[in-house]
Image (cartoon, rainbow, N blue to C red; front, side, top):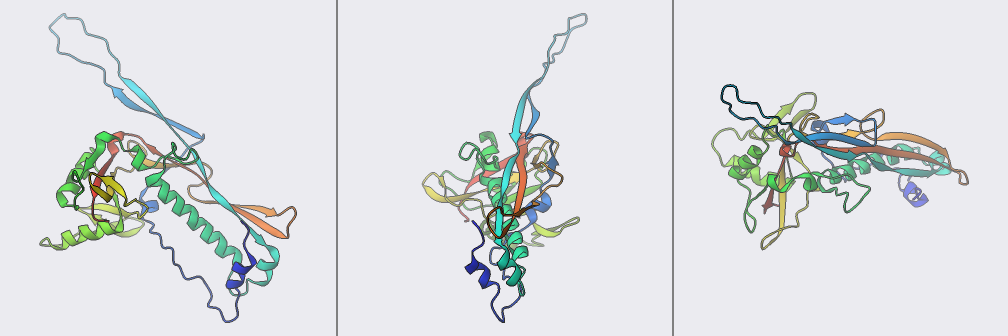
Length: 299
């Protein structure tokens, strides 16, 4: 949909304050902590262990038995995420005195792409939308899913400890809703000593933390999950983030993140088109690198 003249006029009124008041706020911990791996093909394939080779104790002169490990090939795909901006040249020429019409639209389009990506990181399901990549909700196996209570329960330190322990080589982050984090902070404040609810990450700054583990707030986590008789619960995820055996993003093209492309003048309109896009996807190397605690009532 092209930029409407009426929308552009809102940014060009007399005596208007320069800039746009931000109303749609996103937190950047996800992109600061989540690693991305460059891939050279639309399909990225890796192998998981399936069965180990057998070994037994032997008597002297007894024949050794033969055996070999087996593997499961796993494939994930890059997906195309993005959108175009079509802007009338008259509008951008005569109505950019106070606000840069082009710059504002490009910035907010990039913000929209980031929000769609953040949502898909959790809720993406290629069986529901074949154009999307799979998120952690779908990638978490049943064996790595914990239940807070048969009919849901409030979060507790014991639950969080069990969730972290489920990630065998250690969880790098916890992902949860803001309301769930508020409940955890209330628990921490009730304990003697330092609440220890933040940690400093190199080259980024201070982030929320629980027991030394950084916390990513993602309010795209749904709060209408059914657990027994409770119809409004949410989940907390523990993630190991790395390109070797953990959960990570994949990207195609020269750089990770949103790419900008100047398409040029429209063939029939006095307008110019720009395209913002991201070739992105996700990969979960080892299934024990993610765990889910579902049935949380703190939403």
